[in-house]
Image (tube, rainbow, N blue to C red):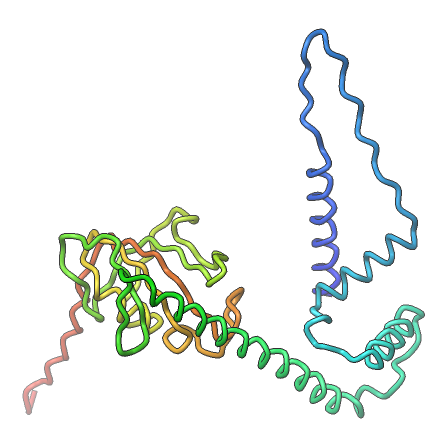
Length: 259
């Protein structure tokens, strides 16, 4: 049911976006004839169904699984049976475990490909970054560039920092931004990715820093949301404030003996 709802919602959104793009701004200028209304394109039912099939395949990521031509033919055969209302060609209870294993191998192969691509992109990126003399490289592999040093103290790992930041991938894609949300973020410095914990200690309160975080100091081989596995992350961070660590709770005093 979730898949059907998602598809319906997405198709409606797709149609709405297309309609908005097709609209023209109409200005009523005296003395000029009114612009002719745009003519809506006409599609056959076969074209509509074909596009719907493409959308379903794209939506569930079929292209990422690298099916062979024979596997694509078998896939279409199974979909045709389902569309015709036929029963499963094989008993799901018996074929299910083997199908799960097969699909896992497909997914693992795809993730492995993404990891290799991410590592190659990171290696090329950091090789190029060496040309920027303003960037400092630390033994951990973290690179940073102080844009503005600030005039306050530098944060300690156990302190809470208040920051505005924008995180991007190597290609410039923004994956997270407190600036876009117009709401600064607060967190204890030792509770985030290692690249942040180490990097923010290199700038003072009121300063701004740019961090170039390799995968080993970010999310490693894991994919997080729209962050592919083995991704290098770039952050521009304004350190707005530093809050001292909360004092540890006092240990209860044991009552005296005999009381």
